[in-house]
Image (cartoon, rainbow over all chains, first blue to last red; front, side, top):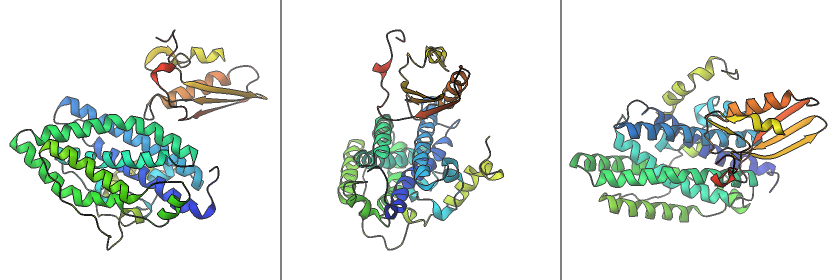
Amino acid sequence: MIEIPEKLKTPFADLILAIADDKLMLGHRNSDWTGLGPILEEDIAFSSLAQDEIAHASAFYELAGELLGTSSDELAFGRTPEEYRCAAIVEVPDDFDWASAICRQFFCDEYDMLRLKRMTNSNYAPLANLAGRILAEEQVHIEHSEEWVVRLGRGTDEARQRMQKAIDRLAPIALWLFEPFDGLKSLIDAGLYPGSDFDMYDAWTNRIQDILEKAELTMHVEIGEPDNKGGRRGVHTEHLEPLLNEMCEVYRIEPGVAW
Amino acid sequence: MDVLLTIPDPEMPISIVDLGLIEDVQIQNGRVSIDVLPTFVGCPALPMIADDITRKVGQLENVENVEVRFIYDPPWTVDRISETGR
């Protein structure tokens, strides 16, 4: 597809903004660990993750900007909270519990691998190319997340307890990554985002359970029809607004100016 | 585009040509368009590289306009590094 038809523009932009917003918030949260990582190696790892996630977000914002006729900065920092399309898991703070940071990254990385793979099959070349490039970079992210989940799960009593607690708290929230949004089906039908959300959820759960088994940890969640709207449809947790206030502080001083 | 050979990666003494970053150069009526492959999407040196290209190519005779585009296809890989680069 060379040109996105008018009636698909909004859902397609929503799809791209969802991945961009997820990554921007996750990158912002990752950057909180700079200077505070439990060991130097992980301080550097989370700083690198932050750099990657934010850069990936930026590239997706560029793509969305081309569709919507606006700039990537405007999209990243200039929208109202309802206009963002991130899922709850990247909004909730980790309260400086490193097990939570690892758990959050784990759930998000596993989801992104699947989401990006679907995007590489898009018939819109700019998305397919970008997703392919980013998928290659996600490989190190996922190795890092999976290895640490196992290491912590099989570590000391404290490590295991904190990991289990993080999984228990975050797994139900992580399900909102899969919230369907308006027009999703039309994107699938048009070949812009081929694949099935059911297959995606199965693949996600199966992979996670494989890793958790190795880690001697458990996850008990069941996905169902959401009875209210969530982040994919602009309804966010109370954590997003303070996050945006912090992240957008400089931009808001004078929107659009070059710093 | 020999001038591109004079532009180094900001972090190591190797030209962006030898690093395999330059995918395509188009010249038409004084308007130059250069497609660049990032080594990785989050590389913080990209804006610097873009500036260097725009400035140095822009200084050449008969060049009216320079456009630098970062593209993701083909993906950059290590085997794009030239013999000289290695």
